[in-house]
Length: 175
Image (cartoon, rainbow, N blue to C red):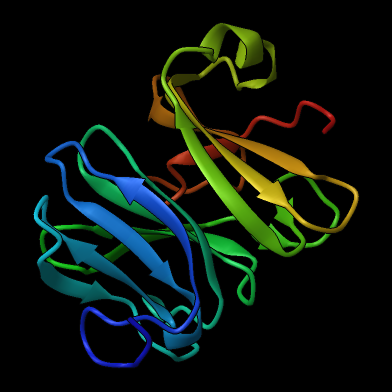
């Protein structure tokens, strides 16, 4: 149903199913993601209009990882924000705009992959142990696909990296 109240939508664009069976829906023109239980009952809203962490001026793609964290691609910020689905708090933002590795141009899709780490291992720093990959699809720019590796530093991170906030490493496969 159309509208701005909880459980109503202004241009729903993507769906993601959480491990517990809850459904997450991007509500593009209401600047949020809405969560519903298995029976379609509204649970909560994640995000709002604004220009601060946790805000979503143009939410597009969404995914939920095995630990229940929600990943939201925002085309206005040109980055991904990670939310705790229990509290709706933003935990991490990653990506940037522009043509360099890790740069996004109108990102619109996202997927989480636990099964294909070996294909990207040669692009990951030797001191980083990748646990899973996050793919971000872009609508424009030179990189239509960005691949990010999530995991743990097992040795010293490269100069300029910080811990633990810099828990991702772009695995630039030349895409």
